[in-house]
Length: 220
Image 1: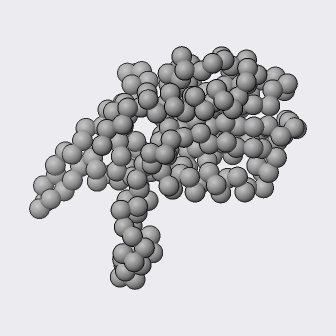
Image 2 (image 1 turned 60 degrees about the vertical axis):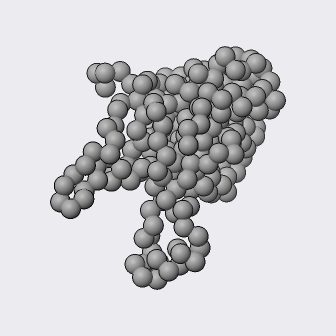
């Protein structure tokens, strides 16, 4: 089922306008989906950010990058993304971001994360993050829609999961998702590799041709 991303983003931005005033800092990851979605969201926002900072999306360089010093006078931070499948990238990005804010000794910073589409697995990851010791002093607000990205495990009921686990063992059913966006092909951590190429009776069939995200340059 097709869902218009711009409509979902507009609905999330309406919530942002109700929750955040003028004074907030926008966090972006340059040339990543976070920047792409933030640029799409700007027309829907009542107030532009007071400042923009760079955030890292990997585990080796988490949080706010040193090239983008930010004012400690602001307590509200806003980060956008298009979707969260496994929730791992979002988890590590927010963990690093919150750790940096804790080290900067901010008084109860509030991080608003706008992700129009998330999976149940990603929701669990965000909930786990809220209980992380290093995030205790940070308030994380997830702004999303009620449309969920379904993981493979969501297509089975509990009795079916128990039977499959009994026969094949734990971790039988993948937590990957089968939802794809028009503007990018998610990585293997989000979508099963088999979706790209299907092998049937010894022959490989191309199910979908991965395309580079529209916000990536051809040289990358």
